[in-house]
Length: 120
Image 1 (cartoon, helix red, strand yellow):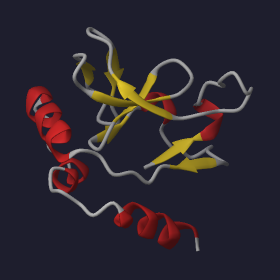
Image 2 (cartoon, one colour; image 1 turned 90 degrees about the vertical axis):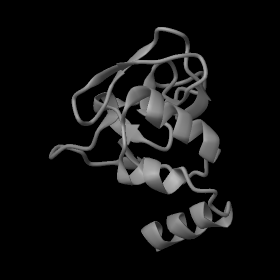
Image 3 (cartoon, rainbow, N blue to C red; image 1 turned 60 degrees about the horizontal axis):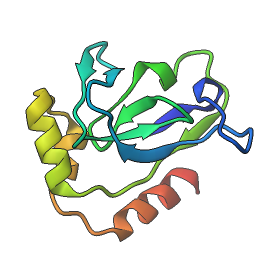
Image 4 (tube, rainbow, N blue to C red; image 1 turned 180 degrees about the horizontal axis):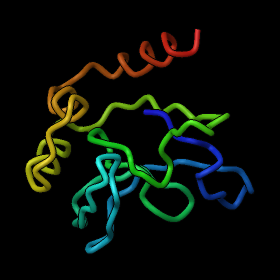
């Protein structure tokens, strides 16, 4: 997934960052399809220094999405637990190419191979 680096909040290091964590119960995210979703504490999210910017393995969020004025991006290459992705996808009734892919047990090396292919 790609994020517009200028839209990511900075962390303690004063640099934009992305992290993975479990969502907080009741936390919300507006996804790239412009649907707002309310999350539970069992769902994985990608966050900047403060807020969710993507639903891990499913879909990115509007807050950090790429647009026609984007000049610099951060690429995320990851591997997530298939059961987490399946449960979140079903609970939120979201089925994307990404969720379908991550609902299968993928070999962890595929993330590295994908990143190499994207940047070289």
